[in-house]
Amino acid sequence: MFPEWLLYAGIAASIIILAIRLTKKLGGEYAWINRKIIHFSITPAAVLYYFEKIPKEVFAPAAFAFAVVQLIFHLKKEKLSWYQLDKNYGEVFFALSASFVVAFLDTVRISSGTLGLSF
Image (cartoon, rainbow, N blue to C red; front, side, top):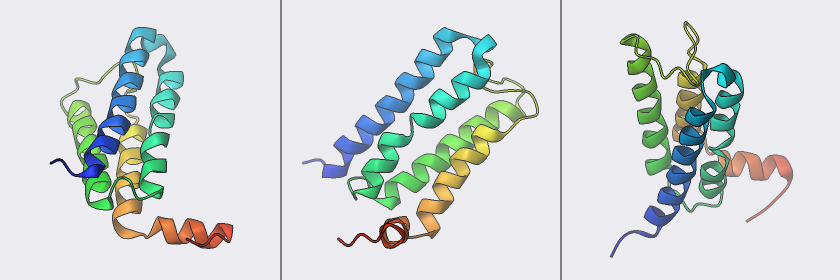
């Protein structure tokens, strides 16, 4: 049987992939808007991580891999023109920050403590 998190990770990844496909149809003239749509598409993954449906051992490496793939496109000068901009690595740093925050910080406890919640 598959681990329970696989379903949730698949749903989260599907939403991100759908956002990337949608923004590709919008085209490069909307690159700045497309970047925001893709950034917001991580929300379901973050929520599922927060509620411990996706383990950090899955979330962090997946975000890191996404950052590396995007960096490779930049370095090879084959940018994904509908959302990647010349000499702007924001989407790479965004994915890296998601990876590092999850890998090295206990964000569930930090967020819960900040909000005064207890689980």
